[in-house]
Image (cartoon, rainbow, N blue to C red; front, side):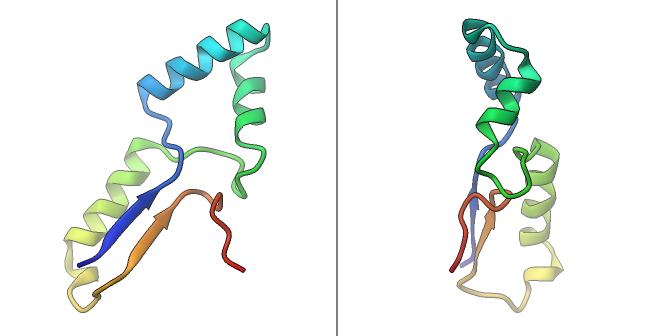
Length: 81
């Protein structure tokens, strides 16, 4: 069995939460998003389409001979040392 571990994903609901936090703080959405992703190596959250691409890969022939793997899709938030 293979698994997928997600970091932040910029869904419509999550975007709404960022917009509210930005409004409450009196800053722009872009400023708030930059603050929230400052500790993410790629400096962004994933998109639902990006997550779907990984799921498609796990369900497709790419994973036919792969077992026991955990794909971490988090933009580098979880860093291995």
